[in-house]
Image (tube, rainbow, N blue to C red; front, side, top):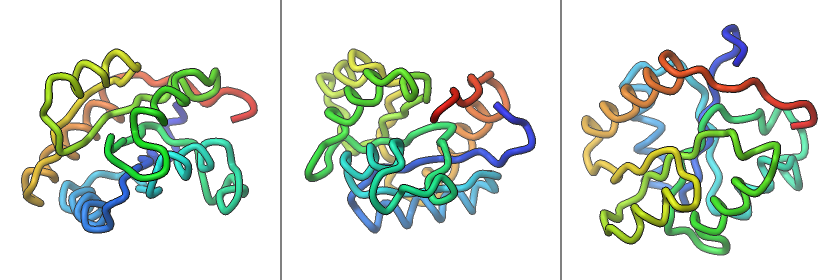
Length: 152
């Protein structure tokens, strides 16, 4: 990835309170990243494909990682994950499932569908900020991510 660009986190979560808490956690963790949010799997795919209100690439820059809630309306996180991993331009984007579930079937399903990680959503701002700090260090400082593919 381009070292000069600020990392982009794309959050797919239908709960406005959870979106706000994650925004606050990014700030509190001093994570140097831009957070973009969508409310369901359909919007997530529109964002990635630059469709509808996300048509302008400046509005929907390619995410470095996707934080994905499993339980969303219209198209849930499981369905969206299948679509992302089936698409050549998007399959390399790390998808971190961040959901309230701790059910073994959800954990297994997330990895079976190609998720890079599964995290149970912390309930406090402090705990969420710690998670965001660790995610940022790992995904933006430790690992090497592939550059955006032509046409994405």
